[in-house]
Image (cartoon, rainbow, N blue to C red; front, top):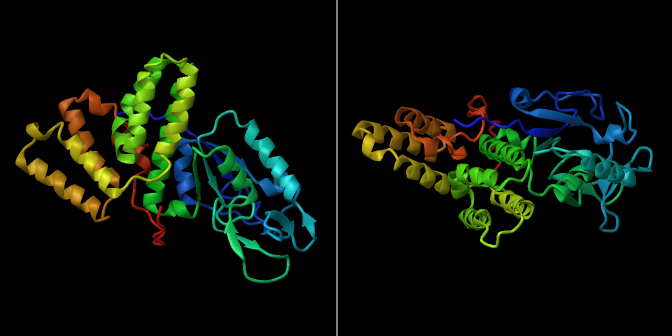
Length: 322
């Protein structure tokens, strides 16, 4: 199977790295601990970085005139420009990054579902948005894997995040030097993955790799990066994943017994019903790749999207959709 590149992941420092929440707490997340051996974490707390202590008075996002502002109601401090300046400088300093795991619903780090208020007075939120730091992340890195720790407790969201994260890390590693042969290698190895995610983008990426205009490699890589990010932006449909797994079965079908084919189809049905994760089906296909020494499939990232130690059905039970 493929060797996985090590993703670089920026993470909110309060998620198991430092007791820097506004109330001095630290949040231990089991998934982040499990992920740690396989990634390089870059931990940051934007609120501490702009000079707020720990513990500290809470901050909130206001939108008095349609423009988002970050204020500290207890002190009246307007922290908007400080946060924007820090965010721009920090993100510009990242030489390598593949994804972000940010604190959910935080006025600075929340990627979504952050409460927006009309004033510093008590009252119900009037809208929902991203935190100011997270908003800068999403604007600067629209093609990267960005999630909050709450959504990652849902195994379907987690599967998509991990698949995307490790695919982006592999892309970054192969991009070094901008060699066309490496781009051909990358595209060939992602063929089934792209087929499951977005077939229109898969065809566009194929045309870029063919490069009939003989464009410069750097230009091709740049265009490929943009479309690759678009291709992996949305989680694949359940039916698309099943179709690709049935397609992979076709490589072995004539060499399997009737019982083996029946076992695979019953395993696929369990996945269809949500009783097992995609890794349960992939393990069967991977065993046949080893058995029949299929070189083409052994290179497919779809069948080995991320380290198998990270595959499970652990779920918060909240059932948030992708």
